[in-house]
Image (spheres, rainbow, N blue to C red):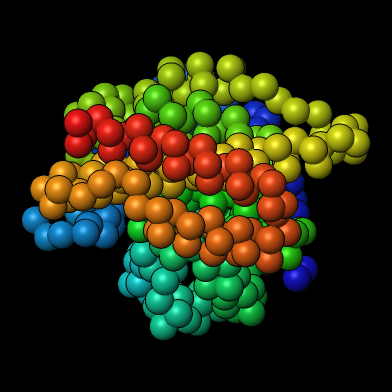
Length: 355
């Protein structure tokens, strides 16, 4: 893919590149206050805000629509920020183009529907405007790639992918599971494509933003989209994950900037270590879920007056798990030790419940 390098069309005000602004444009005063605070930081290259907000359920705040475009235009005129807006329909796109929006982005909910994406891609043909593409809700690399390819085939060469995390059945401390291996594979498949990280939507909580941003930086994120608000606690959407412009300044100042890969021949180790950290976190979550089920089993055994040790079941576990582990390249001794530790912990948990 012949994607235009980021430096050819976007002037960064900082390293890393920061796109920031409120989740939703709630009022003219709120939008201008956010822009003024971000302008003072000197860090932000693009001002972003949602004006059409797709909500999971009706009757929530769904944005002010085209009225809010006037507020963003004022931000552009007063502070010199390029402005970015999420679009989900050709009508949204047309309104943005008429009002001088500099960049549009496609959200995670829109990205799951190839019909909607194709309509947008056809509507944008012949228009020279950058498009940012958030990963779809589903953890499906091919689906994300398909969105990117549809816009590319419509003539858009100024593209950015935004990694905002994925919906999964397993609930962890993140709002959206990062699944770092997916943006890494995307970057490997499309080396010219800038890949930004949206730590706000991955974390879902202010206290996790620093951690997620730092990890993404170590995994060579090309920039960040971070939501800011002058009074985050009062935000009408996504209040828990937004921060003030001043907190954004502090977050960026605390980042440990890694050396560029050409200056750091061991960077691949850091990438693999971060992936191991991610897998370890998932293992801990799964172990906690397993022990919760053990506790539930203990309650049933107590009610049914059953013994804690079920030898036949234990022998079956040892036999089947050992075979499965060996098929996946794990040593028999390692899995035996691991299973015995799990069994001991399970016995201890059940003993506390039954006795």
